[in-house]
Amino acid sequence: MYSYCSFAKKANQYEIANHILSRYNAGLIPTSKSGQKIEVYFSMELYQIISVRWTDHLLGWDPEKFGNNTEIMLPHHNIWLPDTTLYNSLVMKDDENRRLLHAKVTTLGEGNGAFIELLYPTIYKLSCLLNLRFFPFDVQTCRLLFGSWTFDNTKIDYFAFNKTTAIGTANCIENEGWNVLSTNVIRHENKYECCPNNYTLLEFRLTIQRKPLYYIINLIIPTSIITFISIIGFFSTSSINEPREEKITLGITTLLSMSILIFMVSDKMPSTSSFIPLIGLFYTSMILLISFSTICSSIVIYVQKQGNIGNPPSKNLMNIARGVNRFIRMEMPLIMKQAYAQKAREEKLRRQQLGRKQSLWTRVYKLAREQAMRKVRTFLPPKPRSLSE
Image 1 (cartoon, one colour):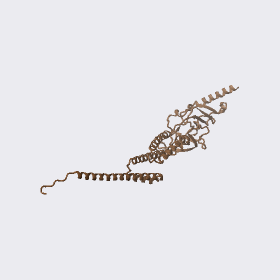
Image 2 (image 1 turned 60 degrees about the horizontal axis):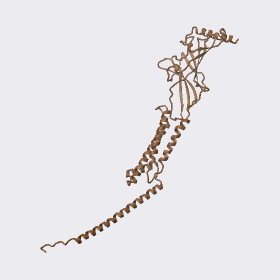
Image 3 (image 1 turned 45 degrees about the vertical axis):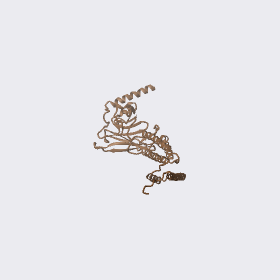
Image 4 (image 1 turned 180 degrees about the horizontal axis):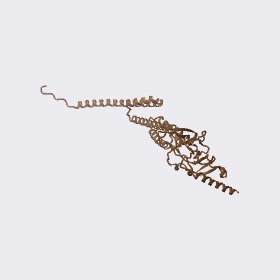
């Protein structure tokens, strides 16, 4: 009994298909009278599903003549399909985007047409303007524009099937990099210079938020630690006896680390000149700060080495140093002032003692020279007198 009913149902479907497709042209828009338009109801699911619904005015049958069958599944190439196009798509071939299968045809009665429902999986690649100013804590809104490419709204008019949810997210597969915040749809009627009538476009807006945990762990925390260590090294105290050349090594190492982190950030971000990310400004400012600290450390070490060999800094260099101290509001620690003052007193005392020694030896030398001259005069023969005397 079951096999007979199943065979009878299939036979009725074959008869329905032969009946409605015998004089049907899938290449022509299915309108039964002049001025009639097709209303297409469009909806989306984030599980790669597009749903398109419309009324075909040329398809339809009397269910009583075909075993009370009101529905039939037909291949998509046997019926007319609206040329729904994603206007901001990056791929021009529909075969690479979507996979059309069968359409569900529900009769509205003989001569009244049929309601068509076509569901198909698709993956769209589209252009989306990103605002990366607050990367990686950014929120992006992408726009998808759907509409007919060939027919204006006097022939095909588009409407959102579900205006409350716009894009369905119930079956959405969780993404590892983004969270879906909200969706909405807006219907537009655009006027183009080429055509006298308007074209209807459905604008679906998808608002997503980036998951920042990966960037916090791999970029922000290491950068903060490196910057903190570099600043501490720059403001560390100097040694009186020997120059602290480790500051230069720390600065160069920090610059190399920051360069690697900048490369990682640029590799994760799309190239754009519309917005300057704050994290990029942060990296640039840190590189400038570390470079400035390394240059200052090099100057300090150079002056300290010159001072150790007895060459005091020039007057101009001292004026520059005082100006920088006033600008950054820094003063020499008291213990260093006392140490430098003690060292200056010792140097002054050493020079005074050296001057005293030199003056003593000078006096001894003069006395010895006078004694030698006296002895020479004593042993010289007397001067002969002249004949006149």
